[in-house]
Amino acid sequence: MRFGAGRFVAGESLDEAVPVLRRLNTLGLATNTTLLGEGVSEEAEAHAVVDAYRAIFDRIAAEGLRTNIALKLTQLGLVLDEELAHANLLELVDHAATLGNFVRIDMEESAHVDATLRIFRRLREAGHDNVGTALQSYLYRTEADLEALLDLTPNLRFVKGAYLESPEIAYPKKDDVDAAYGRLVERSLVAGGFTAIATHDERLIEAAIAFAEREGLARDRFQFQMLYGIRSKLQVDLVRRGYDVLVATPYGPEWYRYLMRRLAERPANLLFFARSFVRR
Image 1 (tube, rainbow, N blue to C red):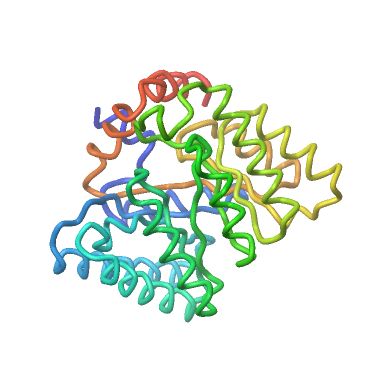
Image 2 (image 1 turned 90 degrees about the vertical axis):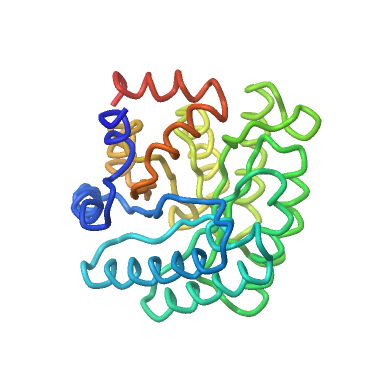
């Protein structure tokens, strides 16, 4: 398992992650990093996470890395109090702004979607333009959520969704998830803002490229995003074709929980991770 995690996690410490981030940058790839962890249950621990992320932003600036941060609101205290999570995130967004950096709010289980979107809206309406969030195509509600956000000219990352959700609220079939993903990306691309297309599915990637070309959209309006250790050749190939690609590169001592949750949340993830060893 340690060998497997090493393929998908950039180490247990920031010192181990920095050379990985730098190497990806030298390949022409943008990166984000995440200090692994979520579901913080004590306020002091949430504040410690804020301090850690402030230090990460400072290190990114000192190293001159093309790297931003992606984080989960439950790591900032969302399960304790929405106001606590908002205040902690605001501190990080403000700190990132002083360094010319950006914060991506990851989307978590469906139970946290409303609070996540409320916090994102509050920050954007307060004038913070260096913050974005994510939307999951497997939730039935997401197309309506996207429409509700468009007045913010948002920076949105589109993912399929990795959490195990009830068929009452999420598409159970892959074809339906993929179809919803395509609709969301196309709607976001023509609506303005910035669209992060986070998928390893070449069909969806090529469909997005073809759509952007038909619509005459500039390439700086969107970015492809993938996970560290998965489809590395595809990432570099897209860069060579002139597209912006970001590699999500997490690190931290909680790598075991991260890897096991990715495998446990959806059975399809196990096959996906296994295939990556031969498709790298």
